[in-house]
Amino acid sequence: MGEFHNTEISEFCLEGRFLDFVIKDGYKLKGLLLATAEGECYVKLAKHLRVAFDLRLPPGTWLQVAGTKKYDLKDDKITLKAERVMAARGTWEGEKISPPQEPPLVNQSKPKPTKTKSTILVCQKSDCMKRGGKAVCQALEAALSDRGLEDQVNIKGTGCMKNCKAGPNLVMPDKTRYSRIQARQVPTIMDKHFADNQREVAIAVSSLAEAAT
Image 1 (cartoon, one colour):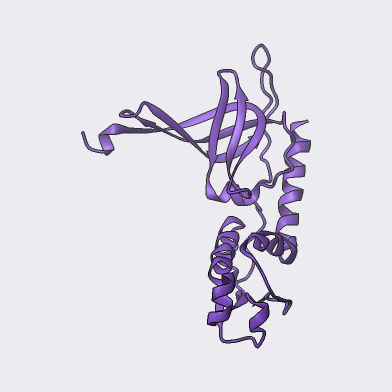
Image 2: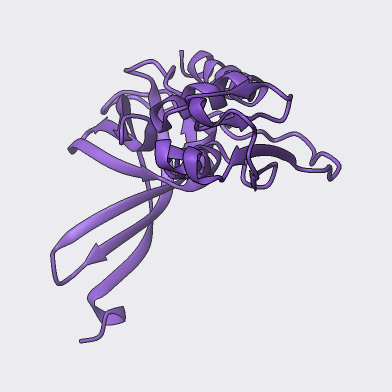
């Protein structure tokens, strides 16, 4: 059989209590663990949902999750991928679940007018590269992707910033300069300089938690 015939794809919709987030590499949100009537269940989050969530969703929150289910006939493995998450009310059985509320997990405001991208400048000279500049660039790219900022922020390599012994060097869009930056520090720096984006997520998750109570 070909790969197409070895895989069945269908839609799913399930309800359960939120248990925990599944995190990769210490900071990358990948999915949710839910307690359902059938037992514990892992659901992978679509990219637009990973960007919208933060880590403040209280354990025990009732959720309704809808998306696509892929069943691998060869490996007898089922993979669930959430495309939509809603707050829900209910119990395992015996009570009706109230109509789920649309959670403001994703910013539903009107599209903002197109504006010029912000730019993060990173020194590309050999001294900075030897001190970890390449890893910093990779960490910046990953951080932008995880936060859904690829369309808003550019990473631009530059010539020498005249601070070679303190490399790697970078300049954020607001002109803040950083020296001796290590890749592990990048997520913290990104959260600091793009706090507005993170604040919107926090408000959205707080509203979701309130809707589920």
